[in-house]
Image (cartoon, rainbow, N blue to C red; front, side, top):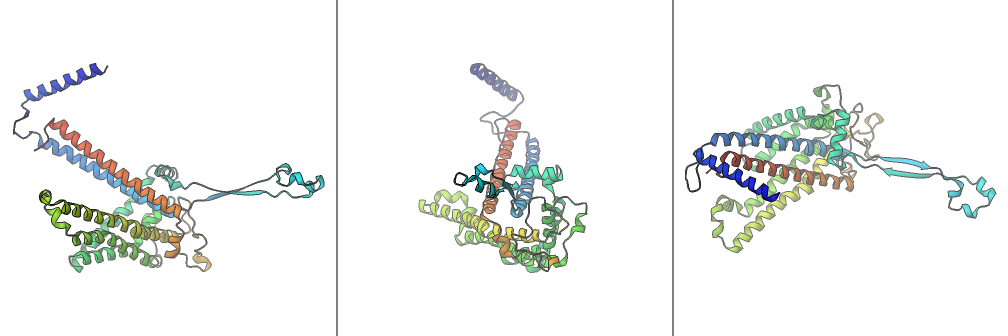
Length: 377
Protein backbone atom coordinates (compact mmCIF):
# COMPACT_ATOMS: atom_id res chain seq x y z
CA UNK A 1 0.00 0.00 0.00
CA UNK A 2 2.81 2.43 0.85
CA UNK A 3 4.41 1.84 -2.58
CA UNK A 4 1.14 2.59 -4.36
CA UNK A 5 0.61 5.74 -2.27
CA UNK A 6 4.15 6.91 -2.98
CA UNK A 7 3.64 6.34 -6.69
CA UNK A 8 0.37 8.28 -6.72
CA UNK A 9 1.91 11.18 -4.79
CA UNK A 10 4.89 11.30 -7.16
CA UNK A 11 2.60 11.27 -10.19
CA UNK A 12 0.52 14.09 -8.67
CA UNK A 13 3.60 16.21 -8.02
CA UNK A 14 4.91 15.62 -11.53
CA UNK A 15 1.54 16.54 -13.03
CA UNK A 16 1.37 19.70 -10.92
CA UNK A 17 4.86 20.77 -11.96
CA UNK A 18 4.01 20.09 -15.60
CA UNK A 19 0.92 22.30 -15.26
CA UNK A 20 2.99 25.09 -13.71
CA UNK A 21 5.57 24.87 -16.54
CA UNK A 22 2.87 24.98 -19.20
CA UNK A 23 1.19 27.98 -17.55
CA UNK A 24 4.36 30.03 -17.35
CA UNK A 25 4.91 29.75 -13.60
CA UNK A 26 8.54 30.62 -12.76
CA UNK A 27 10.81 27.65 -12.09
CA UNK A 28 13.95 27.34 -10.00
CA UNK A 29 16.53 29.83 -11.14
CA UNK A 30 13.98 32.30 -12.49
CA UNK A 31 13.98 35.71 -10.85
CA UNK A 32 10.47 36.66 -11.89
CA UNK A 33 8.08 37.33 -9.02
CA UNK A 34 4.99 35.18 -8.84
CA UNK A 35 1.98 36.66 -10.59
CA UNK A 36 -0.78 36.25 -7.95
CA UNK A 37 0.01 38.78 -5.20
CA UNK A 38 -3.62 39.93 -4.96
CA UNK A 39 -4.87 36.38 -4.33
CA UNK A 40 -2.25 35.88 -1.63
CA UNK A 41 -3.06 39.25 -0.04
CA UNK A 42 -6.79 38.45 -0.01
CA UNK A 43 -6.25 35.00 1.52
CA UNK A 44 -3.89 36.34 4.18
CA UNK A 45 -6.23 39.23 4.92
CA UNK A 46 -9.15 36.86 5.55
CA UNK A 47 -6.92 34.66 7.70
CA UNK A 48 -5.73 37.59 9.79
CA UNK A 49 -9.31 38.78 10.32
CA UNK A 50 -10.36 35.27 11.35
CA UNK A 51 -7.38 35.08 13.73
CA UNK A 52 -8.35 38.42 15.26
CA UNK A 53 -11.93 37.33 15.92
CA UNK A 54 -10.79 33.95 17.27
CA UNK A 55 -8.32 35.55 19.69
CA UNK A 56 -10.90 38.15 20.72
CA UNK A 57 -13.43 35.41 21.47
CA UNK A 58 -10.88 33.48 23.52
CA UNK A 59 -9.89 36.61 25.40
CA UNK A 60 -13.47 37.62 26.17
CA UNK A 61 -15.02 34.25 27.01
CA UNK A 62 -12.12 32.61 28.84
CA UNK A 63 -10.11 35.52 30.21
CA UNK A 64 -13.19 37.65 30.85
CA UNK A 65 -16.33 35.68 31.66
CA UNK A 66 -14.86 32.38 32.91
CA UNK A 67 -12.09 34.09 34.89
CA UNK A 68 -14.59 36.42 36.58
CA UNK A 69 -16.80 33.50 37.60
CA UNK A 70 -13.74 31.69 38.95
CA UNK A 71 -12.89 34.71 41.08
CA UNK A 72 -16.27 34.89 42.78
CA UNK A 73 -17.42 31.26 43.01
CA UNK A 74 -17.77 29.83 46.52
CA UNK A 75 -17.86 26.00 46.33
CA UNK A 76 -20.77 24.58 48.28
CA UNK A 77 -20.81 21.63 50.66
CA UNK A 78 -23.56 19.04 51.07
CA UNK A 79 -24.29 17.70 54.55
CA UNK A 80 -25.99 14.38 55.18
CA UNK A 81 -26.43 12.08 58.15
CA UNK A 82 -26.26 8.32 58.47
CA UNK A 83 -28.34 6.63 61.14
CA UNK A 84 -26.31 3.77 62.63
CA UNK A 85 -27.91 0.51 63.70
CA UNK A 86 -27.21 -1.06 67.05
CA UNK A 87 -24.78 -3.57 65.54
CA UNK A 88 -22.84 -0.76 63.86
CA UNK A 89 -22.01 1.01 67.11
CA UNK A 90 -18.36 0.76 68.05
CA UNK A 91 -19.12 -0.21 71.66
CA UNK A 92 -21.98 -2.58 70.84
CA UNK A 93 -20.09 -5.79 71.80
CA UNK A 94 -19.31 -4.31 75.25
CA UNK A 95 -22.91 -3.38 76.07
CA UNK A 96 -25.51 -5.59 77.66
CA UNK A 97 -28.83 -6.25 75.96
CA UNK A 98 -30.64 -3.72 78.20
CA UNK A 99 -27.94 -1.09 77.61
CA UNK A 100 -28.12 -1.60 73.86
CA UNK A 101 -31.86 -0.94 73.99
CA UNK A 102 -31.53 2.17 76.17
CA UNK A 103 -28.44 3.69 74.54
CA UNK A 104 -29.43 6.25 71.91
CA UNK A 105 -27.91 5.80 68.48
CA UNK A 106 -26.18 9.02 67.45
CA UNK A 107 -26.26 9.71 63.71
CA UNK A 108 -23.00 10.35 61.86
CA UNK A 109 -22.74 13.71 60.11
CA UNK A 110 -20.84 13.85 56.81
CA UNK A 111 -19.91 17.03 54.94
CA UNK A 112 -19.04 16.59 51.28
CA UNK A 113 -17.57 19.57 49.42
CA UNK A 114 -18.82 19.74 45.85
CA UNK A 115 -16.40 20.27 43.00
CA UNK A 116 -16.39 23.91 41.79
CA UNK A 117 -18.18 24.55 38.53
CA UNK A 118 -15.23 26.65 37.36
CA UNK A 119 -12.72 23.86 37.97
CA UNK A 120 -12.73 23.25 34.21
CA UNK A 121 -13.42 25.54 31.26
CA UNK A 122 -15.68 22.94 29.68
CA UNK A 123 -17.87 22.53 32.76
CA UNK A 124 -18.14 26.30 33.14
CA UNK A 125 -19.25 26.79 29.53
CA UNK A 126 -21.70 23.90 29.79
CA UNK A 127 -23.17 25.35 32.99
CA UNK A 128 -23.56 28.80 31.44
CA UNK A 129 -25.34 27.41 28.40
CA UNK A 130 -27.68 25.30 30.53
CA UNK A 131 -28.58 28.29 32.71
CA UNK A 132 -28.69 31.13 30.18
CA UNK A 133 -28.74 29.72 26.65
CA UNK A 134 -26.20 28.99 23.93
CA UNK A 135 -24.92 32.58 23.76
CA UNK A 136 -24.32 32.76 27.53
CA UNK A 137 -20.48 32.57 27.18
CA UNK A 138 -20.70 35.99 25.47
CA UNK A 139 -22.92 37.52 28.14
CA UNK A 140 -22.25 41.18 28.78
CA UNK A 141 -20.51 41.63 25.43
CA UNK A 142 -22.59 44.70 24.55
CA UNK A 143 -21.61 46.39 27.82
CA UNK A 144 -17.96 45.45 27.26
CA UNK A 145 -18.04 47.05 23.80
CA UNK A 146 -19.53 50.25 25.23
CA UNK A 147 -16.91 50.25 27.97
CA UNK A 148 -14.01 49.78 25.54
CA UNK A 149 -15.29 52.54 23.24
CA UNK A 150 -15.75 55.01 26.09
CA UNK A 151 -12.42 54.01 27.63
CA UNK A 152 -10.59 54.71 24.38
CA UNK A 153 -12.32 58.06 23.86
CA UNK A 154 -11.70 59.26 27.42
CA UNK A 155 -8.11 58.03 27.35
CA UNK A 156 -7.39 59.98 24.15
CA UNK A 157 -8.97 63.13 25.59
CA UNK A 158 -7.05 62.86 28.87
CA UNK A 159 -3.80 62.06 27.07
CA UNK A 160 -4.25 65.26 25.08
CA UNK A 161 -4.86 67.18 28.31
CA UNK A 162 -2.06 65.59 30.38
CA UNK A 163 0.56 65.50 27.64
CA UNK A 164 2.67 62.82 25.99
CA UNK A 165 4.97 60.55 27.98
CA UNK A 166 4.96 57.43 30.12
CA UNK A 167 3.80 59.09 33.33
CA UNK A 168 1.04 61.28 31.77
CA UNK A 169 -0.29 58.30 29.83
CA UNK A 170 -0.30 56.15 32.98
CA UNK A 171 -2.22 58.85 34.86
CA UNK A 172 -4.67 59.15 31.96
CA UNK A 173 -5.26 55.38 31.93
CA UNK A 174 -5.81 55.24 35.70
CA UNK A 175 -8.16 58.22 35.65
CA UNK A 176 -10.16 56.75 32.77
CA UNK A 177 -10.59 53.43 34.56
CA UNK A 178 -11.76 55.13 37.75
CA UNK A 179 -14.26 57.33 35.89
CA UNK A 180 -15.81 54.25 34.26
CA UNK A 181 -15.80 52.12 37.44
CA UNK A 182 -19.61 51.92 37.64
CA UNK A 183 -19.85 50.70 34.04
CA UNK A 184 -17.21 48.07 34.78
CA UNK A 185 -19.16 46.94 37.86
CA UNK A 186 -22.31 46.70 35.74
CA UNK A 187 -20.48 44.30 33.42
CA UNK A 188 -19.40 42.18 36.40
CA UNK A 189 -22.96 42.02 37.73
CA UNK A 190 -24.31 40.94 34.33
CA UNK A 191 -21.66 38.24 33.99
CA UNK A 192 -22.10 36.70 37.45
CA UNK A 193 -25.90 36.86 37.69
CA UNK A 194 -28.69 34.83 36.16
CA UNK A 195 -30.48 36.30 33.12
CA UNK A 196 -32.61 39.34 33.88
CA UNK A 197 -35.52 40.85 31.97
CA UNK A 198 -34.28 44.34 32.80
CA UNK A 199 -32.44 46.33 30.16
CA UNK A 200 -28.75 46.63 30.92
CA UNK A 201 -28.87 50.41 31.39
CA UNK A 202 -31.61 49.98 34.03
CA UNK A 203 -29.26 47.78 36.05
CA UNK A 204 -26.68 50.54 36.31
CA UNK A 205 -25.17 50.62 39.85
CA UNK A 206 -26.04 53.61 42.00
CA UNK A 207 -23.62 56.44 42.68
CA UNK A 208 -23.43 55.28 46.30
CA UNK A 209 -22.35 51.81 45.16
CA UNK A 210 -19.83 53.40 42.79
CA UNK A 211 -18.19 55.27 45.66
CA UNK A 212 -17.50 51.97 47.43
CA UNK A 213 -15.35 50.64 44.59
CA UNK A 214 -13.29 53.76 43.81
CA UNK A 215 -10.37 52.66 46.00
CA UNK A 216 -10.11 49.04 44.77
CA UNK A 217 -10.57 50.24 41.17
CA UNK A 218 -7.75 52.76 41.59
CA UNK A 219 -5.46 50.13 43.09
CA UNK A 220 -6.23 47.74 40.25
CA UNK A 221 -5.56 50.42 37.62
CA UNK A 222 -2.27 51.36 39.28
CA UNK A 223 -1.28 47.68 39.42
CA UNK A 224 -1.94 47.29 35.69
CA UNK A 225 0.24 50.31 34.88
CA UNK A 226 2.93 48.99 37.20
CA UNK A 227 2.98 45.67 35.34
CA UNK A 228 3.27 47.53 32.03
CA UNK A 229 5.93 50.08 32.87
CA UNK A 230 8.26 47.98 35.03
CA UNK A 231 9.34 45.86 32.02
CA UNK A 232 9.56 49.03 29.90
CA UNK A 233 11.76 50.70 32.51
CA UNK A 234 14.03 47.64 32.74
CA UNK A 235 14.18 47.45 28.93
CA UNK A 236 15.48 51.01 28.83
CA UNK A 237 17.73 50.52 31.87
CA UNK A 238 19.53 47.58 30.26
CA UNK A 239 19.91 49.52 27.01
CA UNK A 240 18.12 46.84 24.98
CA UNK A 241 16.53 49.37 22.68
CA UNK A 242 19.71 49.72 20.60
CA UNK A 243 20.14 45.94 20.20
CA UNK A 244 16.57 45.43 19.04
CA UNK A 245 16.72 48.37 16.63
CA UNK A 246 19.85 46.93 14.99
CA UNK A 247 19.29 43.15 14.86
CA UNK A 248 21.56 42.78 11.81
CA UNK A 249 24.57 43.66 13.98
CA UNK A 250 23.90 40.94 16.55
CA UNK A 251 26.35 38.52 14.92
CA UNK A 252 29.14 41.06 15.42
CA UNK A 253 28.87 40.99 19.21
CA UNK A 254 31.09 38.88 21.41
CA UNK A 255 29.72 35.86 23.21
CA UNK A 256 29.67 37.83 26.44
CA UNK A 257 27.61 40.60 24.85
CA UNK A 258 25.19 38.10 23.34
CA UNK A 259 24.74 36.38 26.70
CA UNK A 260 24.21 39.73 28.40
CA UNK A 261 21.50 40.72 25.91
CA UNK A 262 19.75 37.37 26.29
CA UNK A 263 19.87 37.50 30.11
CA UNK A 264 18.60 41.09 30.15
CA UNK A 265 15.75 40.19 27.77
CA UNK A 266 14.85 37.25 29.99
CA UNK A 267 14.86 39.50 33.07
CA UNK A 268 12.51 41.95 31.35
CA UNK A 269 10.08 39.18 30.42
CA UNK A 270 10.19 37.65 33.90
CA UNK A 271 9.60 41.04 35.54
CA UNK A 272 6.36 41.45 33.61
CA UNK A 273 5.23 37.93 34.49
CA UNK A 274 6.03 38.34 38.18
CA UNK A 275 4.30 41.72 38.33
CA UNK A 276 1.19 40.21 36.73
CA UNK A 277 1.03 37.23 39.10
CA UNK A 278 1.96 38.99 42.34
CA UNK A 279 0.40 42.41 41.78
CA UNK A 280 -2.20 42.51 39.01
CA UNK A 281 -4.05 39.25 39.68
CA UNK A 282 -4.58 39.93 43.41
CA UNK A 283 -5.77 43.46 42.59
CA UNK A 284 -8.20 42.21 39.93
CA UNK A 285 -9.52 39.42 42.16
CA UNK A 286 -10.05 41.84 45.03
CA UNK A 287 -11.91 44.30 42.81
CA UNK A 288 -14.15 41.63 41.27
CA UNK A 289 -15.08 40.24 44.68
CA UNK A 290 -15.83 43.71 46.04
CA UNK A 291 -18.01 44.38 42.99
CA UNK A 292 -19.75 41.03 43.46
CA UNK A 293 -20.55 41.86 47.09
CA UNK A 294 -22.59 44.81 45.79
CA UNK A 295 -24.76 42.60 43.57
CA UNK A 296 -28.39 43.63 44.24
CA UNK A 297 -30.43 41.25 46.39
CA UNK A 298 -32.98 40.69 43.62
CA UNK A 299 -30.27 39.23 41.35
CA UNK A 300 -29.25 35.60 41.81
CA UNK A 301 -25.69 34.53 41.04
CA UNK A 302 -25.25 32.07 38.21
CA UNK A 303 -22.60 30.11 40.15
CA UNK A 304 -22.54 29.36 43.90
CA UNK A 305 -21.60 32.59 45.64
CA UNK A 306 -21.42 33.36 49.35
CA UNK A 307 -22.74 36.90 49.71
CA UNK A 308 -21.62 37.01 53.35
CA UNK A 309 -18.01 36.07 52.48
CA UNK A 310 -17.80 33.67 55.38
CA UNK A 311 -19.74 35.98 57.70
CA UNK A 312 -17.52 39.00 56.95
CA UNK A 313 -20.32 41.01 55.31
CA UNK A 314 -23.56 42.09 56.94
CA UNK A 315 -26.37 43.22 54.62
CA UNK A 316 -27.16 46.93 54.55
CA UNK A 317 -30.79 46.23 55.54
CA UNK A 318 -29.48 44.81 58.82
CA UNK A 319 -27.32 47.81 59.53
CA UNK A 320 -24.15 46.51 57.92
CA UNK A 321 -22.01 48.06 55.20
CA UNK A 322 -23.29 45.65 52.55
CA UNK A 323 -19.84 45.47 50.95
CA UNK A 324 -16.82 43.31 51.66
CA UNK A 325 -13.57 45.02 52.60
CA UNK A 326 -10.58 44.70 50.29
CA UNK A 327 -8.63 42.66 52.83
CA UNK A 328 -11.50 40.24 53.46
CA UNK A 329 -12.18 40.01 49.71
CA UNK A 330 -8.67 38.65 49.17
CA UNK A 331 -8.42 36.57 52.36
CA UNK A 332 -11.67 34.72 51.64
CA UNK A 333 -10.32 33.79 48.22
CA UNK A 334 -8.59 30.65 49.49
CA UNK A 335 -5.52 28.94 48.08
CA UNK A 336 -7.55 26.31 46.25
CA UNK A 337 -9.35 29.07 44.35
CA UNK A 338 -6.07 30.88 43.67
CA UNK A 339 -4.48 27.78 42.15
CA UNK A 340 -7.66 27.18 40.17
CA UNK A 341 -7.41 30.69 38.72
CA UNK A 342 -3.71 30.33 37.88
CA UNK A 343 -4.42 27.02 36.14
CA UNK A 344 -7.11 28.77 34.12
CA UNK A 345 -4.68 31.47 33.00
CA UNK A 346 -2.15 28.80 31.98
CA UNK A 347 -4.83 27.02 29.96
CA UNK A 348 -5.84 30.29 28.28
CA UNK A 349 -2.21 31.01 27.36
CA UNK A 350 -1.83 27.52 25.89
CA UNK A 351 -5.06 27.91 23.90
CA UNK A 352 -3.93 31.29 22.54
CA UNK A 353 -0.51 29.93 21.53
CA UNK A 354 -2.07 26.87 19.86
CA UNK A 355 -4.59 29.07 18.02
CA UNK A 356 -1.85 31.40 16.77
CA UNK A 357 0.26 28.46 15.57
CA UNK A 358 -2.77 27.02 13.76
CA UNK A 359 -3.41 30.28 11.92
CA UNK A 360 0.29 30.68 11.06
CA UNK A 361 0.30 27.20 9.53
CA UNK A 362 -2.91 28.06 7.71
CA UNK A 363 -1.34 31.22 6.29
CA UNK A 364 1.75 29.31 5.11
CA UNK A 365 -0.46 26.65 3.53
CA UNK A 366 -2.48 29.31 1.71
CA UNK A 367 0.64 30.94 0.29
CA UNK A 368 2.05 27.59 -0.86
CA UNK A 369 -1.30 26.55 -2.30
CA UNK A 370 -1.52 29.72 -4.39
CA UNK A 371 2.19 30.14 -5.17
CA UNK A 372 3.22 26.50 -5.22
CA UNK A 373 6.79 26.18 -4.01
CA UNK A 374 7.43 29.87 -4.60
CA UNK A 375 6.86 32.02 -1.59
CA UNK A 376 6.50 35.72 -2.36
CA UNK A 377 9.85 37.49 -2.70
